[in-house]
Image (cartoon, rainbow, N blue to C red; front, top):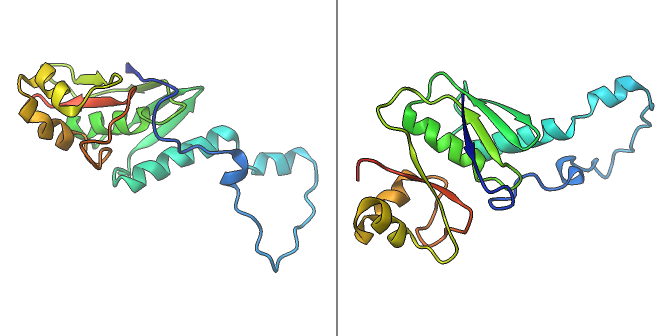
Length: 171
């Protein structure tokens, strides 16, 4: 498996607080007393389970939640496994989970290719046009970078420092 590094403190905030992950009881229901034994503790989702669920929800929101996409969380590293995704889909999955606040690394296997993927970490003050000029030779090719990073990008002007973008090789 290959490892990709991300800026842990940059990205979309999807984890929230532990309290936010637990919906409040309906007002007409009285809370039931919970025994303080180990069986009841085991039934409550762990912080890791809650974070994996939040990551999966983000992939669903982006329309990238294929049936065979499996995520595991080890500290601030996401282990991403899938057998059906194409190379382009895998690169987008890596970026979708890596550009989440609190994630520092993504570990995944990419399908074979002649060249490794080109990812670019956005620096303060950069624009898609500047990145396109650097990587693709023309500022006018910014739209190719925008399209290569859909659905994670919704607007070419909404990139942020620390965000990692996929640079298409066919632009």
